Image (cartoon, rainbow, N blue to C red; front, side):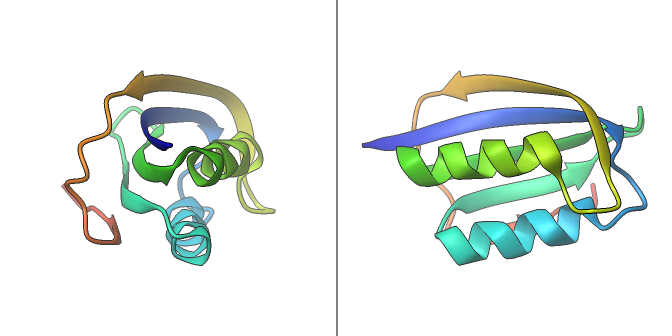
Length: 92
């Protein structure tokens, strides 16, 4: 079953290669979408793919890379759209 989630990660998540590691993990598990930094210090991401793979990405976000200190993760389920062809880091 396909799934899509919108995730907001708070804590020490910028300047610790969170986006890079998220992109690498997404490529490894076959999830599409994007990740970006927010001005308020959080990281935002959208993941689409098989439910088990999307769940794996959410679990990754709860821990982050070794140098991160994740304090809060907000997960908003959304309807699957299939609009992405890969996974990218956004700089907007």
